[in-house]
Length: 248
Image (tube, rainbow, N blue to C red; front, side):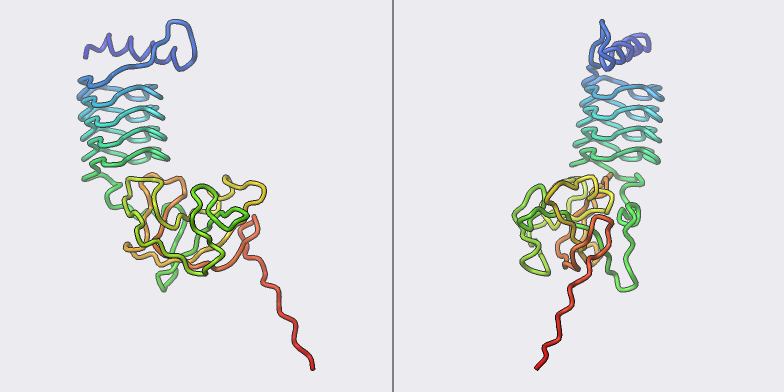
């Protein structure tokens, strides 16, 4: 694509995003942009599905909510790019530089992440959850008044101390799926509502039991977890009432 034409598309997209007259959402479906210089480009919400962006320079680009499904981003420079909420389903990201990129809530289902930093990173410590010497860690669970998860429900976390979901999903490219969904304290605070309760859960950090989605905002899932107790909304465990001694 000619540089002048691309510049015109980007200018109109900026106007569209700002609600200005003459604006138009960028439609770059299947566009040939291999090697293009798109540093710091504003492409929030743009349609780049199927685009050829091999080795393109997208460092610092704002791509929040953009549709990049099926796009070829192999070898692309995506350092510090904002990809939050972007649709990267089935995108080719092999060899892409994603250091510093914001991938919160991005859809990476089926994406090729070969030779990227995401292919080897341990996301649990990244979100601040570090296991003890026995390989156990703790996180939080928000439940409603019925003892079920505040979004999907189905599991009563007050009924049994240990909960197991046999058909859980360990697909790291999917953010919301079957499992015992847990989260960091900060994530739970953002989900707090009247009538909700906060539990502390303990789990084994073995790969066969934990799935942390790529680019997570603090939520992850496990196959099995054990309830430690209920917490107040400062994150501290509530004291268990002591039983009175029986006197004869």
